[in-house]
Each structure stands twice: as structure tokens, then as C-alpha cells.
Image (cartoon, rainbow, N blue to C red; front, side, top):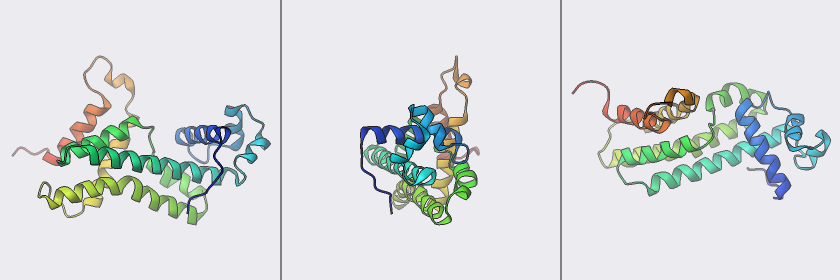
Length: 199
């Protein structure tokens, strides 16, 4: 169940700063003092906006981020042309336009630091909100005979991981070329759909 709080402009700012810091550094490396400092607040006054402390704030931030990704991915996929290449490219465009989730760090670094039940729920939410929309697009394509792999969930998770990893490519890698993260994403999708072996 999601944590509910009164929405205010000040609290929204707390959530935005916490989201940015957690995304950049991970749960363990961020303190409430760090968040308060970025906001120009005293450490103790942050508890007015986050009475449950850092863990509650992290969970709220992650649930909100996952909901945003779910809405964005779903809209991108469902408004794209119906063929699977167009839908996967639309999903890639959404993911590249957003700050990286760093799901690997989340699983190996962040989740062990929080309550096990909260970690389990966040992991399930990550699957449902980020992998499932891509998996549904693949299942639909499979039903139309566009693709034939038996485990579309595995393919969806692998594709999400590849696309998220493109955030780690430094911008200097693209300077002076026509290449971009979008170009790389489309190339990866083409390889996934067409293979690398000569036909």
C-alpha cells in the first residue's frame, strides 16, 4: 500500500530533492541532513515533511518514480504504431528521456538497507510498473505472429536492463558523431528483433 501524505509545495520540493539524491547516490549514501542541506532547511525541520524518516521518504520517492515510469511507458507504447519495433522504440524514447532508475544498484545496494517487506513490495512494483508494460507489448506482438519467443517477461527485463544501461554512456562518446543514446537504443532493439547472424 502506498504511503499517503498531504501535498504541499514545500513537501513537493522535499520529494523532488530526495528523488534526485537517491537516484544519484543510492539509499545508503544519502542522509536526511543531505536532503535538508539541499533545501536550505535545518535537519530537524525535515521531519515535518518526512515524519517516518529516511526509509519512509525513500519508499514514497520510489513508488512515485515507478508510477511515473508506468504511466510514461504505457502511454508511449499504446500511442505508437502497432508494430513491435515502433512500440519498443517508443518505450526506449521514454526511458532515455528520464533520469536513470539504476535497478541493479536498487536491488543489490538499496533494498538490503530497508525493511524486507518494503523491499519485497518495491521489487514487485518495479516489475509491474516497468517490465510488465514492455512484456505486454511483446505478448501482443507474439499473438500477432511478429515474434516467437516463449518467455516475453525475460525478453522485457533484458531489454529494460540494456536500455537503462545507456544512461552510463558518457556524453563525450557522442560528440562529433550522429550517434546518440536514442540511436544506440534503436540499434539494440533491431539486434534483438533481427539477430546478429547473417541470414
